[in-house]
Image (tube, rainbow, N blue to C red; front, side):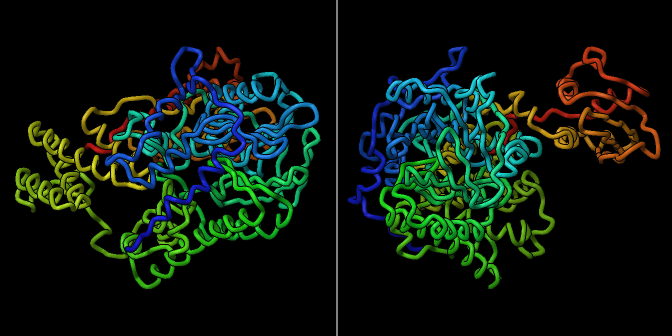
Length: 612
């Protein structure tokens, strides 16, 4: 596969990243109330040096761009705080105060960003809040700009479906996603030339308090116009692109176009390495094409929720067209090869971008990659199975690894062969062999220790050579955990405001996905929840499955237990508070609730990934 880097002599991105600089946060660290550091931008000072052998020069360049920190003027009346979290916070000055766009991940970093703005532009109240889309790095810091009580009368705008999608990931696969995100962003790696240098989309994630203030105004259609504190805004809905609920929008009086996270200065993810529902690259490209036409001639600058702006109408159109073509090409060529019979791994090895896109810095795979995005397209259409019957019923990892090691001639022979492949430069197969050895021999302390160190060394080398920031972080976090075990902090998404935003069906789902099915095989119980202003919902635990449905009117058959309660009481119940303490109305056998909860498990947030 050919791959030609763009010219390093092109400094346009650096000029745009520095344009409009007003001042930085000094020192560039943010702490929580307990003194814990939740963000440290100063630690990336090593990026001022020349690229070392332990980093891909293209990723080093991107890291240097992403590490720029401070308050920047986008155009008159619009400002961005960049480099205080993975994402940007944008501020638009209105008639009475300011409209905040995307208040970062953590309340602490959002508050620091707002304070930096006020230091340079004066103390103005927050008179509006806009969430561009439903990912946590664009709403988690809401309480940092609108503390409790301050949101009264403040319009909070978001695309239709925002609230459901913002919280649903944490109900269904939140534990696994959060664990894998610690790999993806390298948040617990040292920040150093031979460790974490960037995530491509930004430096890394902050580790503060995640909050959520529900929207008060839904954007339901393209062309919808709203005025917030005298600021006119024209919206384009883009559902199913980078997020299930997302929108671009124009500030016509400022001639400025917000592109949310639909067009950033890298190839984005069709499927993130932390895990998510596969995104539709076809729809993504179509909405970018629509944006070119819908907003044509009405802006002089385009900016996004990550990275730096692009100035000049024609330059923005060129950028959008390149991003459009990137996702359309990725989608269509993956499908072409799929329909020729190639599997996901084969497509990933065959597909390559056109030369014009290869030579565009904004199309480089710093966050998403052509390799794993093409496999995501395959997954979207054909799923995990490649059609080869040999892959239909394979052994799970440990059992499969034991057999590979046996075929290779035993642990010693496998280790020797893996080291030989590594010395020859075939790091990919060396990693495969050593991974099998680690999973096959956890009980042999000597072999297990040697295999883990050898695999960690291979992961080091793979990380150092990766242009993709998230690949690098996965490799180096894997090496770290092989050597030191699971350690460090992860983003905490258990803030009560996240739970409050869940619907009653989603709250019940949060229990259902944690039922220990085998232990509950012989259980048979029904519980009715009569929730104020929500109606009756019947829960049935039968054959190890907890199902639930709305019940209109009086049920045909009585439940074993009926609870009459409000949403807040239900949240308290799920948090472990007692029925009698919550003042919940009880009819029937309250022991059924204890029986139900006895089957609910608590997942380990630090489960192993690179070891058995």
